[in-house]
Image 1: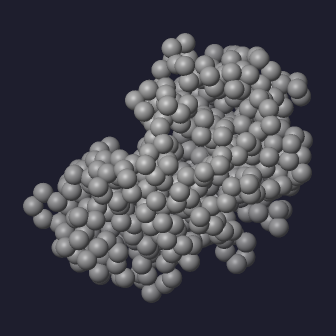
Image 2: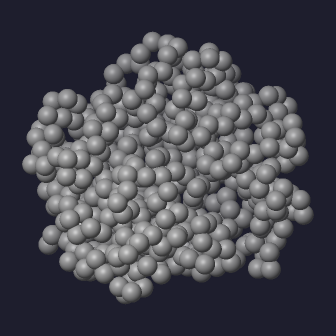
Image 3: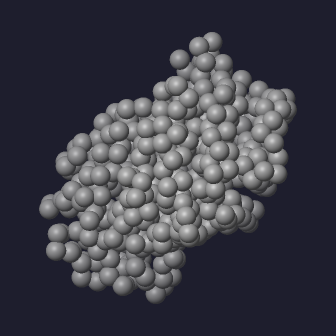
Length: 546
């Protein structure tokens, strides 16, 4: 999932609760009762039963550190006892982050997968941008697919109403020890499941994602003259940015809102919300720490270290690989390393660890830990359980036969093992398997692990070791968003507009079109426009779950 777009995972519109919204859906039945924040606090999450049949070289831990594999497991494990399907037709609506696969009718891998599953599986494959429109059009068509991937950050509104009217409440099938009927789903943590909770019910299988959040990743060749991207203070970072800027090279991409977000970690800004001692919540962008980071970014802009491009530029990654831009913001450390390898296999991105700024303690902001969840269309218990079995198959962990087949296909046709024993897709594999795997792994996948095939090129094992060490450093200061797993109706109603307006204002301030003195009045206005309601509803949910 390292190919996901900047729009989806780097913008301020990353949601913190199921159902974030800006665009309405129709045909979803009666509006759900305004009870989401209270009910969601009480749901019993699925029991956590880690998958232990495959042992990683580098162990995971409870702080979010990813398990790491330096070599490919010699003996693959069978994690699913029998084919989950009943021979029926199943359609999944999901999103892909690469080129579409060959259609099912001319795709031998897809046909073989259907035999393995004992299903006739079809897929409606959306893209980014465009998934919101694909989702809305599918729902408006009346006949819903059996499985629907629901992202928390793509402007899809009225999710609670849609779920209640059209989707299966799977709480009784997965809550507590019931999830043990689906061992691969049971290997997901409570933090993963929280994003699938709406109105006190569990609605789908999570789509796990790396635990770590936004970081600056840099082209090591650009930063070599400054002694590397890492810094110990704002002054040193500014000095290094000036040193590498010159000629046709600029230190940083011009996506100002991401720059402020990442650098606010250095000033100790909260991860989306600050939970205060009295139980109240403060939005991160109205804190003094965020304001300090915004002022620092203004200084970087004045120093001329940002590439003179559009704040919404789409080719910053490529320009970094070419050496025109020194550093860009990535959704997570492993994605940064993989992306630069994709554009230039000889280069591994250097990841910047937050430095101390403003006299406070730096922190790193954990990601949500998922990219959404896949809901199941309403049906009888037998049908719902069959579809849960399909999702359990797709969630097979690294080192299992099912995972290798879904990700790489058939040996000798879709992939071959390289000299070090790692599967590498052939030309057919890229055409037949890659796009389909992208969509199915968006629907659900096992908890993230660092493994060499994430990183293009020949240095995968070293990349695993390097990113594992980066994650170890980030865990020392990493903080979670306190509202993850809690529901706010006001959030679903107002967040999309608030985020867009805040992003536009950051761009206007850094670009010089507006003054920084307009920042605090903007948030004063938003308190009455929905921010106070969001904070109050999240606070109520947090208190009730304590």
